[in-house]
Length: 333
Image 1 (cartoon, rainbow, N blue to C red):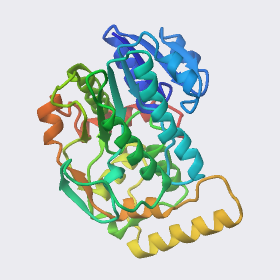
Image 2: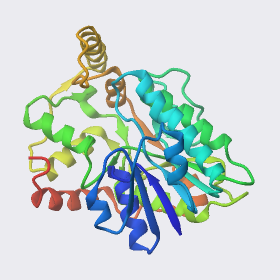
Image 3: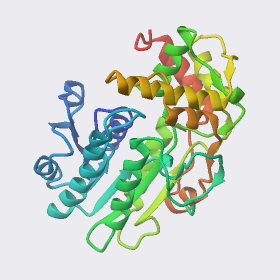
């Protein structure tokens, strides 16, 4: 199989690239920068922006599947940048698949597309898209997911996966932020960290993508559908957070702030950063505050049924692997 992975140099994209290589597939990576470490593995690496339609179309030539993983992530930044990458970029990927006669498109979405601000406890894919978003990231990802699912037809089979809080060795978002803030004494639980959350160990997220690819076909059960992906192990947020800290040999955090205070602090931080035109992300945003203050875990029965998805690495095993990785790495020092 010949596969294109957009965002192939990222955390999840890179893990998908390596798994495809391991099973003998030809892999082409499309990302903004040049990454010689991928070339050394035998990956064809192309540099470009998904907002560049011609570059994306060229990258998709002769491919059997596109894994569209590239995205502008986070809870802060100009709305236009999110729209260009997440919406325009996805439009370009869909058009590239059509121009190059690529029969399969596997899109990496997020459960944030349905998070309207309240608790989500065991919901399945019948949960509608949120009508209001606290940040441009979930809003543009929801728009992009709609485009992908609407594109499913007799020429192009599409599927959207919503892996929740992907983590593991090599993570450059969740884990380093937790470790940095804990070491600086700035990490707080929101509302005591009692709300249940479920996450996704990176190897399990990769499994879901490859299973979706292999089962995707015209009129297959997964064609034109979105799926929640997670561990299937909801737990209090403090247990997951402190599990990561323990893997980094950092004492558990017990200090907490009320959810209302966290939201207000995020709103004030955004106001100040906008007023001073500070480009870096504030230490707390409204989007992050809501995510930390609410329960969000999902029913993954549909993924089990239609994709054959079964989380192979438990949370405890993932934390053990992470501990070994951190012990041998200086990446988060």
